[in-house]
Length: 212
Image (cartoon, rainbow, N blue to C red; front, side, top):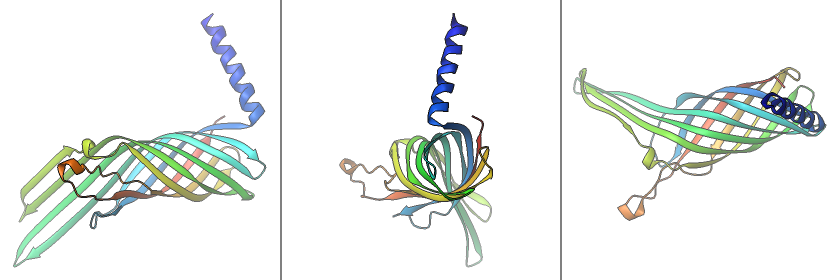
């Protein structure tokens, strides 16, 4: 009985995909990002995101592409200074995990090439801050702590980019620029926190393999 239910579900799903011309695939990308706002010289960092994507053809030259992705965002900055013969160095790094839901309109104006524009809804899963500092090789600061309680859960961003179908109908590559509209810094005014703004900005280079 259970096998019959699974078979029926597969038949119905295949029929829906065939009727509406829906493609399903897996997407992975490397992202290079930083923070914009009130944080001074936050640096840049390399992360990645991976998940599933679905493409619905709306018009011959337009599709809607949506996905669900796990997104690792990392930003770090390292400095070394020397004063009166004394050498000091330090590094600070933010590491954040998000669950992203990107939705973009894809325009195939030129065969094999496309342009994307849309939005990304992000939900913070975890956030960590690490800082190290040393003077003449002696470590004087070593911090590694969760900052999830200081990070807003929701992140809304705009995205735009372009790409190409390397293997039409099977493999796409794309470049996307993502700019957050909301600050991830949670300001508790009841505790006297300053109204600071810190938003994500990142660039993604990814590939999508359409297997259905």
